[in-house]
Structures are given as C-alpha cells and as structure tokens.
Amino acid sequence: MASRQVFLKDLKVADLKRELEERECETTGKKADLQNRLKEALENEGENPDIFLFEIAGDINSALQSLKESLKQELQETSGNLRGMEQRLVENATQMQQKFEETSGNLRGMEQNLRGMEQKLIENMDQKLQENSSCLQKQIGEYVDGKFGEMENKLVTVEEEFQNKFLEMERKFATLVLKGGEQQRLINTTLKSPGSDIDRLSNPELSSRMEISRIRMKPPQFDGKSSWVNYLRQFEAAARANGWSLAEKATALTLALRGDATDILQTLSLEEQDDYHQLVKHLEMRYGQSHLEHVYHSQLKNRYQKSNESLQEFEADIARLVRLAYSSTPENVMERLAVQAFLDGLRDIETRQALTLARPSKLVDALARALEFEAAKQSCRGQAKVRKMEEGVEEGTCNEAEIRRVVEGML
Image (tube, rainbow, N blue to C red; front, side, top):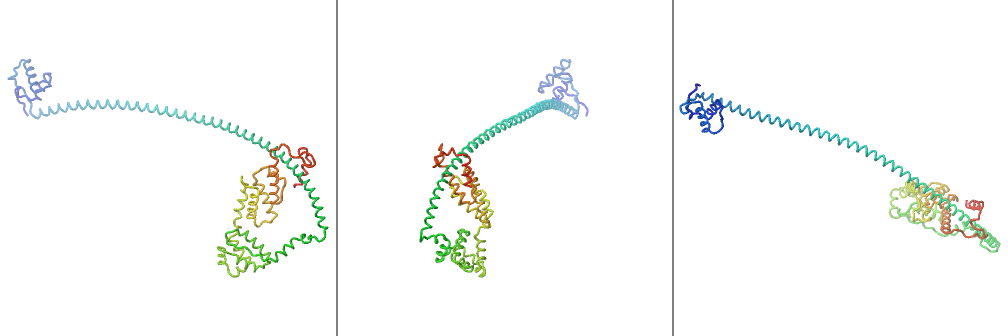
C-alpha cells in the first residue's frame, strides 16, 4: 500500500512514537505529550509544525511494525524473565547441592558416631560380663566353701550323736539282758507248774482255727467305689475261714455285689458267672489297678516325706504304693523295695544314715529303727553330756571296740 501525508494533529500514537524515535526523543507519555514533544522537535529543526506533512506508511505496514515492536518488547521481557528464572534455578540448584553435601557429611558423621558407640557398647558388655563372671565365680566359691564347712560341722555333730546313741543303746541292751534273764526264769517256773495251759498256748494256730470254724464269716459287700484289691483280700479271708469251694466262692462273690458293681453281671454268661476265676478276672479288669502300675511306679519314685508328715504316715503310704506298683512281686523282694523307698524318701539325713548303717530287712523294722533314732536324738539334743551307764562308766569314755560291738548287734 502507498504512503500518505498527514499533519501533526492527524498522527496516531504509534506514528508519534516512531517520529520521536527517529529524532531520538522520549516516547513516553500521553498522546498530547507526544504531540507537543514532536512539535518542539520540528521547531528545533526549523520546520513549521502546523504545515509540516509527515509520510505515513499503509495500515498493514503500520500494524506489522506495531506488532513487531510489541513482540520484540515481549521477547525482551520474556528473555529477561527466563534469565531471571535460570539464575534462580542455578542458585537453587547450588543451594540444594550445598545442602545435600552438608546432609551427606552429617550422615557420615552420624555413621561414624554410631560405629563408635557400637564399639564402646561391645567393649562395655565384654567388661561387664567379665566382671559378673568373676563375681559369680567368687560367690560360688564362697558358697561352696561355706557349704563344705557346714557339712563338715554337721558330720562332726552326727558322729558325736551316733556315739552317744550307740552308748545309750548299749545301756538299754544291758538292761534288756538283765530283764531277759529274769523273764526266762519266770517262764521256766511257769512251765514246771502242774495244770498249766501251756499246751493250748503253745499251739495258737490250732486253737484259732477251732474257734473260727465255729463261726460263719459273712463277706463284705462291694459297690465298686472302694478299693478292689483290699476287698478281694477280705473276701479271700472270709472264704478261707468258711472253707468255701470255688463254686461257693463264685456264688458268694456274686451275692456280695452292690450298686454299680452289679452291672458287671450283664456282661457275663452264666458259665462265666459260676466260674470264680472268670468272675474275679472281669472284676479286676473293671475295678482293678494292675493297669496303673506304671503310674504307681512314678508316684513311688517321687514320694518324699513331707515337712508335716510323721514317720508312721510316711511308712504307711510307702507300703501302699509298693503293693500297688509291684503287686506280682515276691514278698521278700517287695520288702526290700519298700525299705529302699522309705530310706530314699526320708527328710532327715541323719536318720537316713542311721538306717543305712542298720540295714533293716523289713519296712516295719525300718520304721521302728527310725522312731528310736528320732526319739534318742530329741532326748540328747542340747545336752553336753549323756547320762552315765548303769555300770557307772561315762558315755564319752567308751572305746571304739565297744561302739563297733553295739553297731554289729544292731545289724
């Protein structure tokens, strides 16, 4: 498009700014300011502002020029903003790098501190373990030494009490010998007297059988709640006293059943009911304790005298457990087992040692010896000396040969 000529008053703002830029004048302000500033510039050039014509390009070129200038200005502003953002990003990255390096250094320091603490902790634990081990060994040594000292003192005390007991028993044996001689003379006198009942007294078994034969023994009843072993022994005693045959024993046992025990008859045929051995076998399977022998073995093995349990109570329970645990064992073997269990379960060590030296063969003998020793120990406790023997010799003057003789007499 061709250019055109316009007066100053007809120039637009963009044209005014362009003209001012060409003349290197300021281009800011309102349109009137721009016109006045351009007017002054024309006057300075020697031109008349009122008649001076300006060459103005077409509208498209003007718009393009304006757009170009606007884009240029925006690009400049955007470049400035981008440079600012780039600078800030660089600064932030630098700060982050510094913080990362500081954090890494702190972590490395913490790691070194943790390793040092771990090493110190291990060293302290090792030191504590060594100290505790040494202290524990020292305490154990002191405890063992103390216990050995106590055991030595107790052994000395036991030895003294044994000597006192043996001397006391020797005195009792001497007294019994004297009394035995008197009783023997009395028996001889009685045997020589006419019309005595010595014949009847000398055969008590025959006399007892004659008395029992005149009495009809009634067996006890069995309801399944009491001990079957004890009941069977009572029934066998009644059967022997009455002289029953196997058939009579089967009938009597059938009639003696009561309560829940009668239910066993429903499981038997008539032939088994009339067979005494079969009837006892079924009752044994139902109410017997032979299948519990291993339980009684364990109870007997772990049976010890309780703190408030007397020797008689302990001996009775040992006898019961031995018969339950070894019901099919011969009597002599059962007695040895009972004696050993009685010795192993005694609380008092001195009594156990005394019975071990005495070596009783039966449980009742072991109980008697234990009671004698307990009584002697109670009577001698707290006394510095024992009483003199009837012969006038003090107990402490008895020699070793006399003590050995008393012990051999006990054995």
